[in-house]
Image (cartoon, rainbow, N blue to C red; front, side):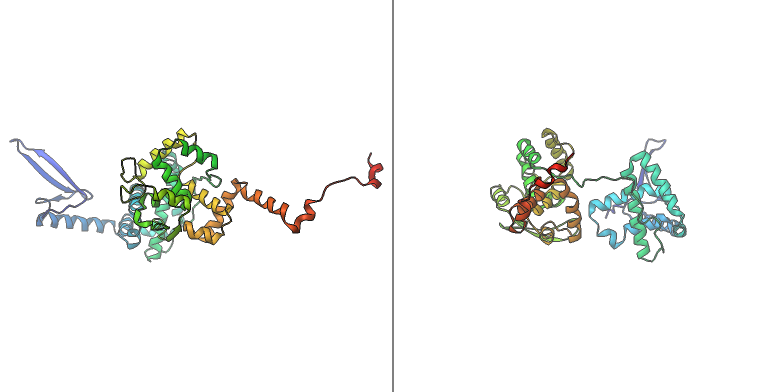
Length: 360
C-alpha cells in the first residue's frame, strides 16, 4: 500500500555501471529515508524525521505555525482562506520561524514585526504586507486564547493599505451601459446580484435547489448565516425563463460552472467594453443595499435580505447613501406636499413699505 507523504525529496543518480538508483530524503531535516515509499522501513524513517522536526521546532514560532494550521479553529476556515493563510505564514516562517515563543511576550517584538512589514510593503505592496501581518496576528490571537502565550502585541495594528469604496455604487446609467454590451451570462449575474445583495462567491455557488420558485435560500460562505430572500417579479421572470443546463444557476456560455478567476476576467472585459473602470462586481452588493433603502426598507428588513448585522447595514448606508440624491429628493417632495409644512412652502420674501426708504 503506497502512502502519499508530503515533504519528501526524490533524487535519481546514475551509477558508474549505468544503473539508476533512486534515493529519498525528508525535505525539512535532510535525513535519508530507507526502503521504497509506503514500505514499513520508509514510514519508520519518515516518522522519526517528522518527530525530530517537531522537537526541533518546539517552543518556536515555527512550531506555533504548525499547531495553528492543525487546530480546529483553522480547520473551520474556507479552503481558499486556509491556502492563503498557509502561503503567508510560509513567507513569515523564513524571518520569524526560529524565534522563541518567549520573545512574543516582550512588547518590543511589535517593532520587529512592523519593520518586517515595511520591507514586505516595499517589495510586494502595502496590501500584501498588511495581509501577512493580519494572518500572524490571527495566529497569535489563537495562541493567546489557547493559553500558549499571554499577549498579542501586534493586535490592532494600523494598516498601511486603505481603499475607500464608500461611494462606489452602480448608477442606473452604468447598469444600462453594462447590460447593453455584456453577454447574457453576465447579465444574469448582475440581475441576481442587484436583486439579492449577495456576494459573488455565494452567487456563483447558487444551485437550482436553492430556488423554490418564490424564495432563494442559501447559507453564506463567509459568515455562515442562512438567508431566505423573496424573489422580485423581475428576478422570478429571469429564473423561470432560464434553461437548467447545470446544477448551478450561473454558468458560462458552455453551461459550465464559473471559476472565480474566469468570472472576474470576463466581468472586467465587459466592464471595460461598457466604459466602466472603477466599479467592481462586489459594488453591486452596496448598490442593492442602497436601492432597498431608497425603496423605503428599514434596516432590519435590509439585513434580513443581505445577511449583514444591523450595525453593518447602518454603517454601509451612512457611506453609500452619500452618493445618491434619491432619498433627498423624496424628502423634499414630502416636505412640499405635507399639510404640516404648508405654511413653510408659502413663505416668500417681500419688501415692507415702511422699510423702503431705509435702503441706502
